[in-house]
Image (cartoon, rainbow, N blue to C red):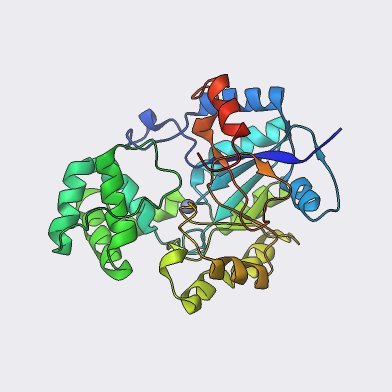
Length: 321
Ligand SMILES: [Zn+2]
């Protein structure tokens, strides 16, 4: 029996943070990751991304309860922890990399500087430090634009909104860099142990994993001009293909909520040769969804975080919840 839908699950950190210098980073503990895979493998048919790509293109079919696993940001967790687990289970994962971060001369992305500053300082002190450095009051009532932050408290969301959505990029980068050096450490040294490197990507690709692009610098695409968006998107297919030999190269939007990209973004993705794109609209993916706006659910939407009732409510929704 073939299916017309698929569960695409999104992961970020998979690590036991209590054993790291940053216990407040929000991560999926390794044991819970394994437990969630047990549940997924019992309830779903976890298929390689190529199955979904083919089915979307009308070249193949999906099993009735198909699921795919996706991992964002090219974190070192994905090489050290996730890759061995998936290989042992014979599963495919798709890993979305940002070119600036996952090169041989990696740069720590502002999004990650902000996460670690938040973990070190707390939302209140971090927010105060950013406001003091920026010298401007926060805009009231800024639009809620993120797709994956609903589990954070209000203060954390406010400071993230300020550094990611409101301040000019260059100013936010400079402020985050100064604060990171002062409170956490050297961002260059940090980046070298934080992201997967091209050699690891090649090893994972040989081990059956799939890769995709997550832009060049992880800037919010909706804030960029068409020329700037082209810079972020145009090189990704050749970059991933060069490391992995993949014919089909998928994409996923930084931040990923419905307002983090534009119709222009979707047009450029199509013209740049990507095979599909994921956002973070939380519902079940259907084969008749637009191929460059495929929804995903978060690891926190599944057991052991969510009840069976909450999951079935989420999956039966036709719009974002
Ligand atoms: Zn990301």
